Length: 310
Image 1 (tube, rainbow, N blue to C red):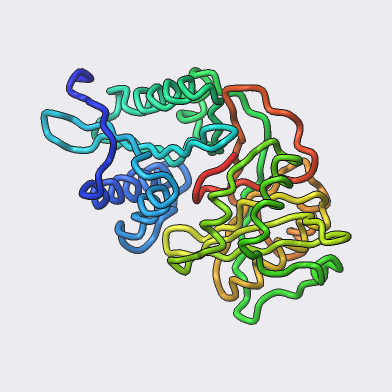
Image 2: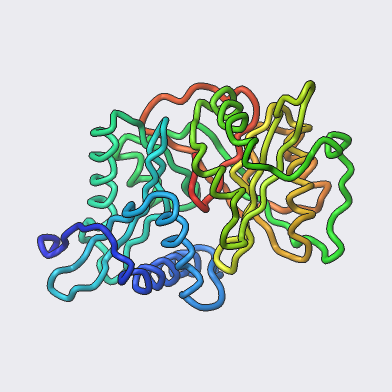
């Protein structure tokens, strides 16, 4: 019965069970709908989600727990930012299907966001109509389409042929204020603590590059993570397509020998064609969605899933 499901926030003692839930429920959907797993290796790898969200915003994982069995029926991470609340990865255990687990988790986060007078934003698979319907019924509206592109980066790296690449360098902590202002100008978002976290890279998973413009102006940035549970480029923000191409090529070259995935706005044809020239392939489509109105992006915004951004 749905009445036996109660919501509470996660504790560190829950992380192993949350990791197993993320690993198995996500793979179950991909096996049923795509014929392959999305997470490989051991479930312990997906503790990454617990670790990163806890580092960024302690106590921001809400659980649906079945009081009769004490099992975790569902989990969802959320990330309050200055301009919005970001909805992170949400999972519901197949054993609890039909009991309103995902709906109740989402309702909790929407209530939280209303209390903060903020919109909720997310990036979700366009191929998962169950999740699309869940969000759509709750008032989310799509505002962007992204192509998930994948590339096995050669062990020797890639040929960086974008002229703007000579202006790319590693990000430094002193770049964070300019990065924050750039993303606010381009995409209307502010989340400086995320950028500080990537640059500090205390766990060794992250890398971040910036591209400089005229007179020291910052024209773009792009982060990447390489971990058994997540090998992704993003988040990123750039003023121009050429800035984006230079940053993508640079971050791919940093990840020599790894299989990397990244999200490209489908309406940026110059970037998309440059990715095809790299031999990147499309592997999925995702939708940026929001409960509120989203102003047009004045450049390029590249979201990611770790931590999820929109």
